[in-house]
Amino acid sequence: MSRIGKMPIEIPAGVEYRFENSIFSAKGPKGSLERPMPGGIKVREEEGKILVERESDSKEDRSFHGLARSLIANMIKGVSAGFEKQLEIVGVGYRAAVKGAGFELMVGYSNPVMMDLPTGIEVEIPAPTKIILRGIDNELLGDFAAKVRAVRGPEPYKGKGIKYAGEKIRRKAGKASK
Image 1: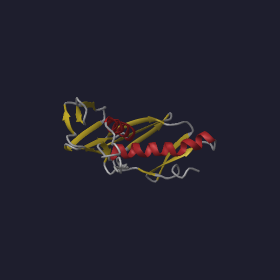
Image 2: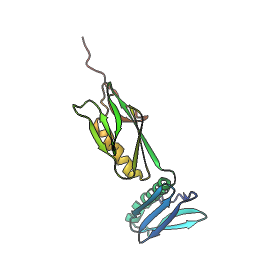
Image 3: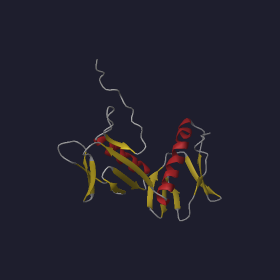
Image 4: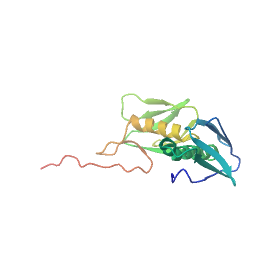
């Protein structure tokens, strides 16, 4: 049995959920999410906790058991507390600024790069070299944070670029002179 799949999911106060026709929906103080689940998955509630079970012991059902539990746990956490990703900008003259419905990155290109925010994602720029992204959908948030990082990924010689907060950049030695 899947080690992740058999762990129960706590239901925080103020969160409601429904599981009908293989579609799981959760509603909480931060918003609501809906997602289709893989076939062969059953969801039941016991003592204020959600238990994710599989209908059969087939290879396909076993492979989706832990995935379905993780997706449901992320939805429950998202609608109750939300998710946050922090990015740091390293480099002389590199900075970010909020502009209209999105934000602008100045990271060494001849023109600034404009990033439009997807629906459900909020941005906060407390310092010119720090970006904080918040949202309730963990998958959408991680995907957008990866797109922002890909605008100018950190390079290995000086570490200049956009990186996740706390990310270790593996440095290379420069040319050795005689």
